[in-house]
Amino acid sequence: MTGPYAVAFRTLGCKVNQVESEAMAAQLLGSACTITAEEDARVVVVNTCTVTGEADRKARKEVRRALRLPNEPVVVVTGCLATLDAEGLRALGSRAVIEADKTAVAARVAAILGVGAETAARGATPGATTGATIAPRVGGAFHTRAMVKVEDGCDAYCAYCIVPYARGASRSMPLSDVVAEVEALVAAGTAEVVLTGINIGRYRDGSADLADLVHAVAGTGVPRIRLSSIEPLDVPGRLLEVLASTPAACPHLHVPLQSGCDRVLKAMDRGYDTRTFSEVLAEARDAIPGLALTTDVLVGFPGESPAEAHEARTFVEGCGFMRLHVFRYSARPGTIAAEMPGQVDPRDRASRAERMRETGARLGAAYAASRVGGMARVLVERTDGTTAEGTSEDYLRVRFPARDSRIGDVVAVAVGGLGRGHVTGRW
Image (cartoon, rainbow, N blue to C red; front, side, top):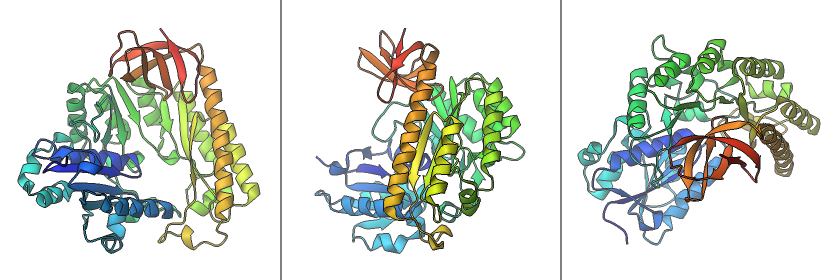
């Protein structure tokens, strides 16, 4: 049954959106509000993404779906699309309420429910400044791994991307606030923090950069630190030295490539070529023993020929990534790329994405096979008492006999074999 102050969240897009939804939920928890399923909610918050044209379509679809729920909730729409197209979203239905300012969402929801903005504010946690939360995640999962937002915005202006227009220029959270948030998470039992943002390599707080932030966060005693996506031109030697000398730092970096073709990279306005990218990977591998590398690849960019698509796959194959996140190009109105000639047929984009995913599957299998016989330190994220599963320091999914391991434990197991989407471990 729908509670009087029941709120549901639907989050689309990036990890930063997920962190921000958690911060909104944390502000509402502790007051009279409860977080519940959409079918039981009086208010549904839809946190939107607008990175591509397809993301826009998905966001509008989610808003319309929420408006059609039989419980007829008020649908509060926030996020990047709400910043860029408030009127278009408002036109989707009379119960659609647009709140582009994510920091004001909790108060807006509280006002709709009649809780009172000051009551919701009392439910806020220290993580409100960084975007992380001490409260349980939306949906109630235990915080074994917690994302902590350290930066927002981007000023790179890649040809295909609308994010700088939606989120503004890069800006960083105070180092002291991030450290305080991590200290609170550690006290609550969190074993791994993921420092995340839109462009975390641009982190600056006075003279402190990302390397200084990693060092300071390590001082909290958190068992594991992981970085989210970091641009290839933002991986300086000093950061690599700090990561290599920090026991808590996970030997895993996500460095987005986007294309393995130099002409396409130039058209994307990425600011580097494949040679530079290869040098960054080589330097990182030299600095951090056993480093695992993951990446983003965008296929079907305007003007990309079949030969260039093949060139990109060949380059990716040679990089030895452990995992690929493959995206089909989708024109986003307002970006330079949306007006470029040579838009690739959607069927060709789909087939190129499938071939790139096949490349990624081969690379992933090869990396996993290379780990068989080695040791992995696994953060236990779920267990049924018989089998435990979690994430290794180098970002493998590992399943192994549970024994007496508990959620939140970091245990050492031997990698024994390959499963579907995971490796098996043994004590």
